[in-house]
Image (cartoon, rainbow, N blue to C red; front, side, top):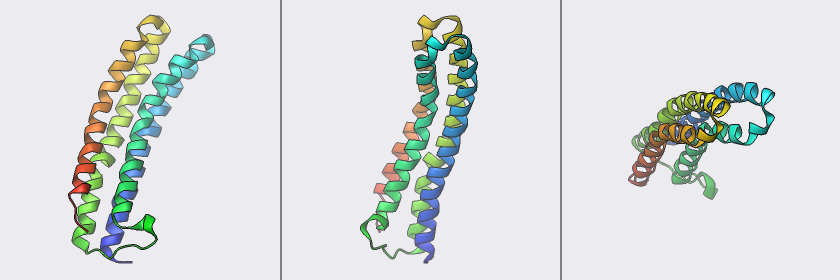
Length: 157
């Protein structure tokens, strides 16, 4: 395999893996808190689930970035392009914004959502505020995804 293709695939793999790890960790934090709440108040499951799924979006963003990177090198067309190492590095670096921001924001969004479970337990009518606080963390994952997309679109293969 050529260096350029290997680097591009590494970028796609990092986008999926790191953002997926962040999402898994974040969802895990909220799941632990939610499990305690619904063991006492099972009727709050739906709202707790909403808080739990919020950190999962980073993994989706990483997957989208990986698909775009792999599409760029022709993996889905059946014929992988020959690209120089420099272009492979460009694709690798283009995938880093969502890879790193997805990892970190997924973890922190999970922590904020986990705290939101406490709001749901004490003041269920205020759960919308907890959702907004959690969604604010995601803003930076969205910005990073957009940066990754813009950078990928600017790379000529």
